Length: 119
Image (cartoon, rainbow, N blue to C red; front, side):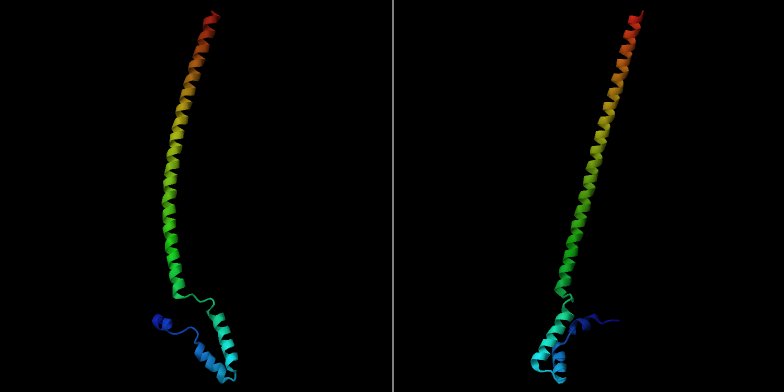
């Protein structure tokens, strides 16, 4: 198993040790510095720092809060829409009942006039 504390304490890339290795191999100071700097840039370019991870964690927490807020708002909006739909449905039903009642009454009046004038 990995000892996380020891791993965090050890540098990912020991520039001083690498500089010494290049100097021992025969490179001059400027060459060794340039190579070590280039390697450090390549190796460390994609490594997340503790601050990066903390910021990412904070961003995730913020997103979770926003999602929870949006979920609550969506539920409230759905309740409002359902209530509005029910009210409109009831109004439509009332209008339809009124229309059918008037149509039956009108039909009765027309039948009455036809019957009265046909005698």
